[in-house]
Amino acid sequence: MRGSTKTILLTAALSFGGIVVGPAHAAAAPAPGPERVCGSGFARVAQGKQAVRTPSGAVFGYVHLLYNRRTGHTCVTTIKSRNLGVATFVSATVTTQKRGASSSGGGKNEGRQVKYYLGPLKVYGKGRCVRYSGTIWDDGRGAAVATARWKSWGDCG
Image 1 (tube, rainbow, N blue to C red):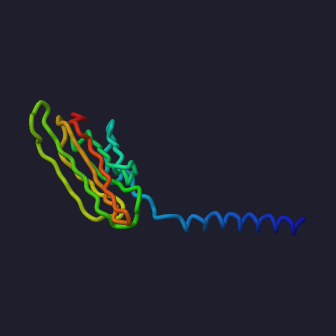
Image 2 (image 1 turned 90 degrees about the vertical axis):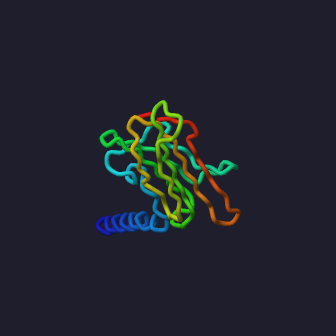
Image 3 (image 1 turned 120 degrees about the horizontal axis):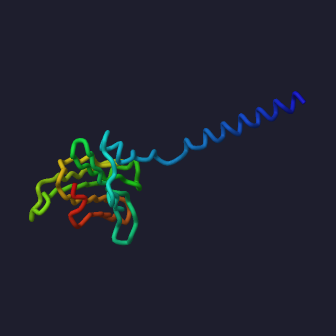
């Protein structure tokens, strides 16, 4: 009986070791969530996640809109879901508009080569409506551009 117990324990240990070692061969680590990118106090808003899609419908990632009630700031980040760990061009834009105003009140736009995500882009948004967008380029074979934009003014904080 003592020999069979050792065999069972050895088999269990080897099985467990196989499970632990297996994930080391997995793909690149995922990008952080938008709350982590934007920082403490930021929370997602309704309709604050838009898929960044190619014209054919392929999703390259997501652009996120978050808001911090304490500071009144809005944050946008574009996070890749494809080509993780490979530098590709990614952009994010956030524009604010005072309620009832006919023009924008300001905003930020940034674009550059990144491996996982772009952002955070933060603007003061208390009492203002917001538009945001994101773009991700696939530089590989059959290169494509994916975009997402919230076309109308919304989330009027």
